[in-house]
Amino acid sequence: MSGPSDTLPEIGSIEPNQHGYRTFALGGFGFARDEYFAHVTWPKGRHMLPVDAFLRALQRDIAWGFFYGIVNFDQVIGTVNHYGSVDLFAGRFNEHYRRAKLDHSERFPTPKIQRVFEAMLDDWTNAGFDPFASPQETGLAFGPKNGSNKAAITRHRVTARRMIGAPGDEPLRSDDNGFPVNRHFRDVPQDRPEVIAEPGFEDEVVAFNLFAYLSRSDVTWNPSIVSVCKASLYCPTTEEYILPVIHGNDRVEWFVQLSDEIQWEVEDRETGAVRARVTMKAGDVAAMPADIRHRGFSPKRSMLLVWENASPELPELYASGTMPPAPVQF
Amino acid sequence: MDQHTTRFGSLRHFEKGGVEVINDDARNYVFSNIFEVAGRSKPFEKVAVGKNVEYVIEAIRVEGTSGWRAPAQDEFALVMDGEVEIRLVKLDDPGVVPAGARGSIAIQGAPAGRKMGLVRARRGHMTLLPVGAAYQFHAARPGVILLQTLAGADTIERWADICQTSPRPRA
Image (cartoon, rainbow over all chains, first blue to last red):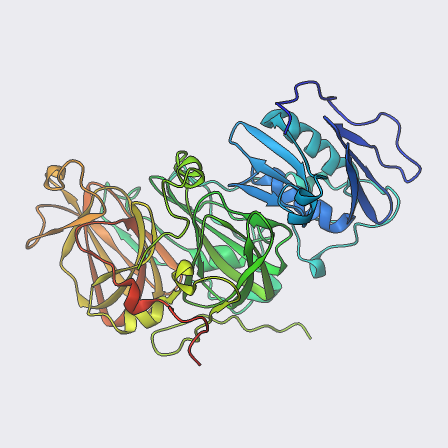
């Protein structure tokens, strides 16, 4: 892998290609799109992804701040978060590319890769396509350049400091502030907890309906922080169809299925070799070990509680073998 | 036709998924079910169903009236089943929680302090259990809380009893 590249173009090409889209470069990587595909090139290879899948993955990578660990766009392309810098790779976590020595990886300061990714997402997302929405709730990504959808790709990222609905914290969702109940959750009760605070304690006796809050989520596969217990973060999300990335862990991650069902394909993080299939139904709890990657499938929109430990020292402890990849030994 | 039914679980009815091993050990996934765990627990046992270094999530069967507890940091109680009354008291002496304590500690008898109020919470409702306060749970009928906290002296870990260990889920 080469060292951090600090000589990136601020934006992509000035002139659009024949399909109306700009091309972009990041170090030795090149990005172009046509009516159906995103094309990625690097010094030793090239790759094509369906552009709708590419934009859905790109959207999550940007919105999550490159998330915890590895965001595989597919079996070839992705990013590794080093929390201050980011590796962009091709074939790095694909056993066959590695064996053929066709893999490539470059490290970039986070603000630079983020700026280029954001510009690419903005230019390549047409009017009517929302990369955060489920397939049934959005238009198509395909075709020649057709406007933009900046509102959809620059949504506010929910990061509660203490708890949703606490004084001064992230607000509740309602019809009035633009969050109607999702079509799959019309049967979810919208009642509120009964809160009786004595005078002077109105700001400390706090509760809200998390399930109603989630029923009004307008995005899929987008964990957002709703409660903070030191470095323990509750990051629930609503899921429908397929997780647009294959998430490779750099720490243990936990899932609590709050409603309905998700099936997870679990693979070895380094090679992609299949390890297990995990089916989660309402009330099920499962860990995702620190050495795997996973992709979820949700036939109906469901509520998933993603539970993270945001302690910054964890990636090194797992990478060095100081901590075992599974969270509990029994 | 655009009609969907959202499926939640409860003590009385839940379905459980599981791990289908292809090349792994099912124990790596620490797979359990909150309702199954709470269904087999005594009232107010704090049974860890997830552990992430010092942090835990605990499944708590709520039935009757609990003793009082004081958290060493904010905790969050998510009701997964039933209706739970959560009573809060502002501690006159927050020092009853020793420095360096994790999770929460049990308080003998009633805590000394002013009543802050109460929350009546049902399925899906999340309540802040603030540091500096003491709390008590009450439920007329069995319910379940999922508690976001740190592992403390009263956290129960019985992983081999609650987790899938075989390569396939039990039919």
